[in-house]
Amino acid sequence: MARRANFFEHLHPPTLPRRESGFGYTFGLGGITLLLFVVLGVTGVLEMFDFSPQAPENYRSVARLTFEVPYGWLIRNMHYWAGQAMLVTATLHMTRVVLSGGYKGRRLNWLIGVALLVGTTLTDFTGLVLRWDENVAWALLVGTNVIWEIPGIGPMLYRIIVGADKVCCSATPVRFYTWHVLGLALPVAILIVWHLWRIRRDGGISHIAGSRHIRRPRAELVRVESLAAVTTLAALVWLSVSMDAPLGPPANLERPVDEAKAPWFFIGIQELLRHLPPLLGGVIIPVGALIAIALIPYVFDRSKEGEGIWLNRPGRNAQVIFGAIMAAIVLLGVIGALRR
Ligand code: HEM
Image (cartoon, rainbow, N blue to C red):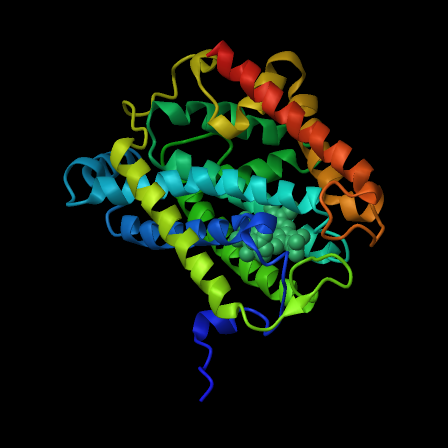
């Protein structure tokens, strides 16, 4: 009697393109990003049992979790490192999609992906503020002040995000906590489900036109995915055991802002803000880069040819524009990091 497919095998279509369902095409990056998000959900819920959002109790509760709650340090470290790793793997996954023409014929899913990257970045950003140590000063004072600069809606948006006319110890940390858990992480979870469903609706993973589809290897694919998942989890635990999530002295928002440090993924924006007016460096350039990325399948490469082909010719403009934006982000990040 034929063996029945299990739950995980059913998550995949019955037939798969031979080449593209292999590790050498996706590098498992979408799946690893998904796994990291699941880890974030589980460790985040565990952290919620001990966390108090009001300042200064927020700082004390994070310190208690780190130093007193049994295995609290491990839960916190895993949450922190999974958050940083998810940003890296989501960006690498997006890069793979651009270079292999994976966005072709998948415009809506590309936009969902861009929304996921924005949502993931903002979830990480709001999460960093929750520990309320000295490192949150840049995020709270410089990062949020950029919102004022948005023409027309800036002040209103600032109040919605920060909870008052200026950063304060009662409203702001509670606002950030609610944004982090319900305003951002929850929508990201919903978007991920939509993203995965769209892959099936778009005819499965991108592939070279007419490529050979095979029936058998669903179980084989699940085995490879399980191996990638166990390796990712092992790496995450190893990282969390060997390197602690940062926790400096309690926040002192009276200190000069010049000394404040942006989180690593905003070092590029901090660098731009050093040289340009806040509206240009903090809003127009970053949002412009994001819009350019979102428009890739709508403006820079509308062709269907080249799907599944690395560095395909019709996608040249898209690859160059994406590459230039990424290179600028990395370069600004390196310059900013060297300045610290
Ligand atoms: C942040 C959370 C994300 C998760 C959990 C996720 C998950 C996945 C998974 C599991 C796949 C299947 C193939 C693969 O593993 O590569 C996939 C495909 C895809 N993703 Fe994502 N993704 C995320 C972010 C993004 C981003 C930031 C973009 C681009 C802006 C994007 C665009 C796409 C597209 C267009 C496909 C179809 C590509 C193809 O079939 O080759 N995704 N995603």
